[in-house]
Image 1 (cartoon, helix red, strand yellow):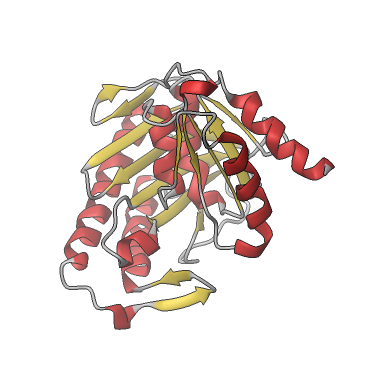
Image 2: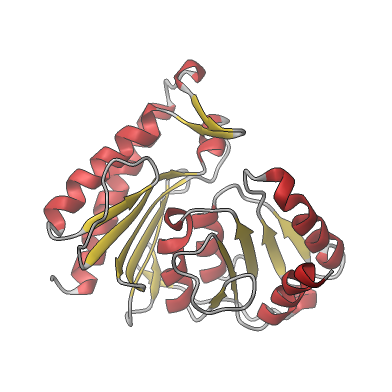
Length: 264
């Protein structure tokens, strides 16, 4: 396999090409092209064609790898390596011309995340990291912030599984709104993770999401010095449907509230 740094930079180019396609399609996109996958969960030809573009390019880059993709363009069998692809993270934002939205590509070997690339299309920001190599934004190193909980900017996302998640987000907002510095919602898991890595956010959590939503962003947070876990504080989050990412200083504050939900 190619050196991880070279591989990561090649993936950055692929993500940017997909991002350019998405940006151009947004100029003349018609709402009639939208399909509903589930309640409040949408897809269009833009997601599907972006995914095909990415998969074709990644197959040339690493032919021996399988795939986990949001739109099911390619599959993973017994391959040692596996690409995890979200061709358009933040589709609802995209449909409403509301940033951010992004291309997200990660590479797994077993449960090991080898590299991650997230390209935020509207701001032309490419976040990337490879295992042991640090985290970067457009070529410059990035690091998590140092805010304690009372000064922290937090992101509590709103997944599509609204009824199941309402008690969780209501508790989080009740606990931290007015206690931390403030609370935001972005509409893109991949970008929320990258913002934690870059110190723009201090903490983020979300449940009922796919591996394609968080895989690339997770290694970027890790290489930027952040802390990651499941809602129950387990460091083995790969393969699950929930994730907590923080600057490390506030991690237990958020996990404690999430654990308490199971004890009420």
